[in-house]
Each structure stands twice: as structure tokens, then as C-alpha cells.
Amino acid sequence: MSSGWHFLQIPGPSNVPERVRRAISEPVIDHRGEEFAQLGRDVIAGLKRVLKTDHTIALYPASGTGGWEAALANTLAPGDSVLLCENGYFATLWGDLAERHRLKVKRIAGDWRSAPDPEQVQAALAKDTSRLLKAVLVTHNETSTGALADVKSIREAIDDAHHSALLLVDAISSLGSTEYEHDGWGVDVTISASQKGLMLPPGLAFTAMSPRAIDTSTNGGSPRSYWDWAPMIAANETGSFPYTPATNLLYGLREALRMLDEEGLEHVFSRHRRHAAATLSAVEHWQLEVACTDVSARSPVLTGVLVPPGHDANDVRRAALDLNMSLGAGLGQLAGKAFRVGHLGYFNDLMLLGVVSGIELALSRSGVPHNPGGADAALRHLESH
Image (cartoon, rainbow, N blue to C red; front, side, top):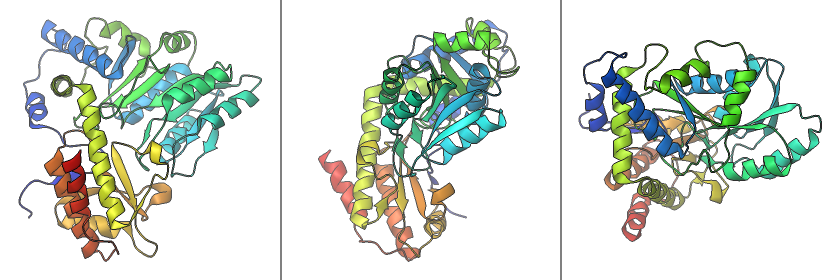
């Protein structure tokens, strides 16, 4: 049995701070009482600050996948067509879920090494002269590759095409770790969840909705019950829920939002960028390849690392696990070819140095050729930034 803390360096669930764990351990309270109503109002107000929205939020006991389903069920009906930016594993899964809802999914296939191209979105919408495409589906931070989409430019592409499609964005792994503006970027539905930048265990999902999205839901969408926005919106106005909520996770969420407020979102985002850059310094020194080839789109949340041909990334992960550290697996097209390093949420310089040192040791033990000294490269970056 290993001693010391386990290094959980997958790109989510992320490390849960002690303050948040203590908050979650509070006694369960009456979810129809005033104390709980204040809790509900607090977390909704805090989420709006992080999302940068004045609009409505619906908060569900669910994983991020539930948020996907809520967004689709409320805004689209069977037979509707959607445009999917398919640039990684999770974008692909969202498209698959849409097809199970009997939606027609037109996929803009990406190379799984870069972010969605706004010009391709505009071109696809310009060809849709019959306006059959009802929504554009974009993953803001593709967790399988470490590529960050330019959501603002995609909104501009939709507008430049003079198209009426709704913009639905998966911000599950980006919210709380990098800049995001639901209102300012013109997003119609933002989907996120608790277990990434918000530093909680899995179990909470939410959607932020523009007035146009709510109007679309009121007048259409698919048959739904659990995911229906209408009763959730009505209940949330007073801090309550239409069914039993995840009370103790909401305690944790309130504490996590307080921590983000105390540090300041701009500092939180700067910290994530700094740790991503230090990790990149190590990877480049090792002379290994970063999964995301688009330098301007590299994620502050995680770094995907490719191993040389003839080597298995899972060997690196097994060696890391022997050192008491978990790294993310390569997924889909990158299975066995890449491992993923999460540097998000509750994280600091010393933790990062431990992570890159552990990866370097795992590379050596698994026989992956590399140039030693990546940990020193990360240290030099941190010293100078």
C-alpha cells in the first residue's frame, strides 16, 4: 500500500479541496426549508458570476452527460438537424447522443489535433439555404486532445452566415479554469458540470440558457420530464428544486465558488495558463509531441502527450500509477498513443513539479525514449513567470 497523497492528474474529476470536502460533510437539511433556499440562491448566483451571465440557469443532479441531454431535449425535436464540430472523443460522444435522440447530425470532422474551424462552420451554414440546421454543437475544451475552441469566433461565423441556428456549447471541462462568457459570446446554451474546474466530485450538471433558447424550449423541443427546463426555472427562482436535489454537493459547490471568488477569476485563469505553459516546457524538453498541434488553441486545463511509435502510452500510465499518480488515458483515435496530464482546479507550483518529476520517472521506467531534464525545464519556467 502506497504512503503519501495520491496524485490525481487526470483531466477531471479533479482534486477536491479540504474546504470543499468539509462542506460536503455537513448534515443533510430540509430541502424545502429556508436554509436550503438560501443555499440554492447562493450557488445559482455564484454560477452566474463564473459563467458571466445574467440569464437563467438550471441545475441538475447528474453528470455532464445529463447536461448534454437537457440541452438537446429542450431545444430540439426528433428529425431536427444539427451541425457538430467533431474534433475529439467527447464531441463525438455528444453527436452520438444526439443521434440516439433521433436528431440528424451533420459532422464537421476534425483531425483530433486542433480546435474547430469557424470558417468551416460558416461555410456549412451558408450552404444550408433551407435553414434545416437548428443548432451548432461545439465542445469548448476537448478533454481528449487538449484543444480549446474559439467560441466567440464560432458565434460570429453563425452571424456572418445570417443563420438562425442556436449555439450549444459544452463547457464541462473548461468552466472555472479558463475564460468563458455565456452572454458576451452569444451562447444560447452552455453545459457544464461539477467535477472539473469547480473542484467538486461528479454529480452536478447545469445548463445556462439564453432567452431565445428558453423560448425555443417553451414552444418546442422533445418530450421530456426530468430534463424539462420549465419546472426547474420556476423552482430555482426561490432557490428550490422540483425534486430532491443533491443537497451536500450544493454545500460543496457554494464553498468552491467562494474559493474562486477569493482568488479572483482572472488570477485563477492566469494560474492555469502558467501551469499549462510549465507543463509544455517539460514536454518539449523531453522531445515528445503535444497532442494539440494548434499552438494558439492549446488548453490551460490539460496537456495531451504522444509517445513515439512502437510505444504504448498505457505503459507510461501504469508506471505512473506504481508511483501513486493517475494520468488520463488516450481516448478514441488516441488510445494507446497518448496520455493526458490534468493541471486544473486545486493545483499549485509544488504539485506541478511533483507531477512532471513523476512523469519523467514513469517515462524512464516504461522505456519511452526522452531527453531527461523536463522537470528542470518546468522549474525554470515557473521561476521566470
